[in-house]
Amino acid sequence: MYCKQFALGPERQIDEAYIKTGKLRMEFKQFVGLGKESEYAAQASLCAAEQGKFYEYADKLFREQKSPNSGAYSKSNLKSYARERGLGLDGAAFDSCVDSEKYRDRVQAEDSEGRKRGITGTPTFFLDGEMITGALPFSEFQKRIDEKLSKQE
Amino acid sequence: MTREPSTAVAGSPASLQERFDRYAIPVLSVLGMAIAGYLTYIKVAGAEALCVGVGGCDVVQNSAYAQVMGVPVALLGLVGNLMLLALSLWRLRVGVDEPNVALVIFGLALFSILFAAYLFYVELFVLEAI
Image 1 (cartoon, helix red, strand yellow):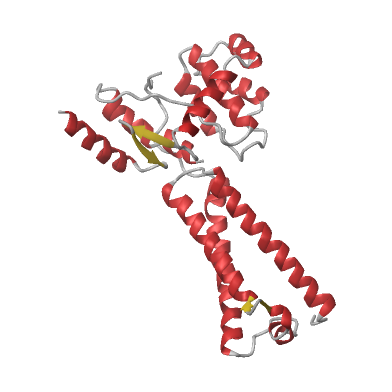
Image 2: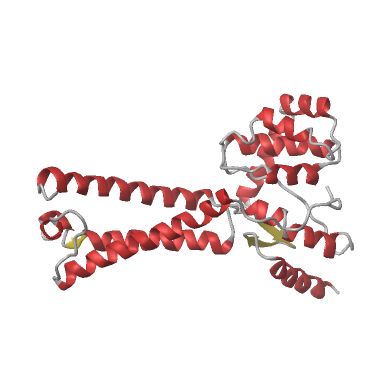
């Protein structure tokens, strides 16, 4: 729920203000604390990344989000979301990627890396090594990012 | 993976489901605190409980079942609801989906429901207050 709040709000503002201007690089890591369906969704997002559409597909997943493990992220739903017009994903390639579960190990590895770094909930951020928990408003991210940037100058 | 420009408007209004997920626990725990607080006051002040609909509140309030090791059960309810309120507000303020906190909230709520069911059983079949 709060990842959605971040992805459809502050993340876009951070993108406009810092990423597109080359001041910040953002790396997304999977953390799957909410059961089987969140694992499937994480793997599917990496299948979309293969086709260069990670964020577009992730946004679609957030828009379709319902209670955890309620069926919203079943494999068949994940495949049908990929067919949304405008996303421009190759459906057949996406389906075989999802069915193969080729990203299962990668998702699990990223998840364990997160747990080792002390993450217990989502979203959690590491800004230049500093852990930030929760979907903060853009102004809070702005304050922290500017602080880090000013130290580097 | 860098972010591509998106056509969607930044932010999105919270759905009914999301609003329910966020506010149901804080609202219900405040209601629970109000009831438990009232009953704690009655117990501590020795006042007479205002019964709505069916009688027998005082029978229950003054019985041996109304306390656990000297602590009024209503006070336990007040503390339990306060903990639920604190945890749910923390989650709301930080803005984090935290499975461990969700589990603690679930455990507290489950324990409260089972304890309330036991007290209801006592009211009906032991004290025969209703």
